[in-house]
Image 1 (spheres, one colour):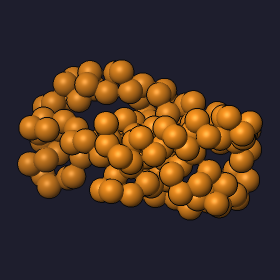
Image 2: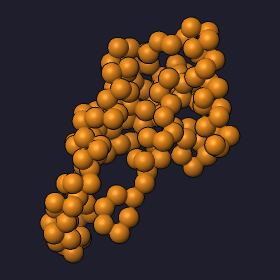
Image 3: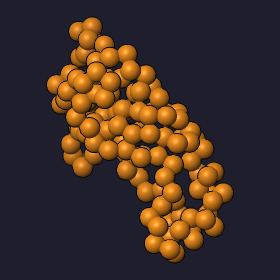
Length: 133
């Protein structure tokens, strides 16, 4: 386990011990829980040696991502041959503020991501997807 992951776990445990287990808003808790399903999400995790706050959207259930890629392999190959980058089954980008309440995520959850921390999920987001991955 990396030092960054250990620090993240310690941060979460410290917040639980202090009783600081609240979300910046109801929406943030729901969006964090939704990261494993369809719809929009918010999450924090380590990438390239630093913690990032990310928001995004899953167009398909994460467990079913491989099926649309396989089912559309011929279409994907044609799009690639035509220099079209890819078919999106999910997308994400870095964020600083909660889109629901405007809270500064780093200030509210801490430099280590606090309750939004899920390193495994963030690593999966950055992992290559599709044929040849």
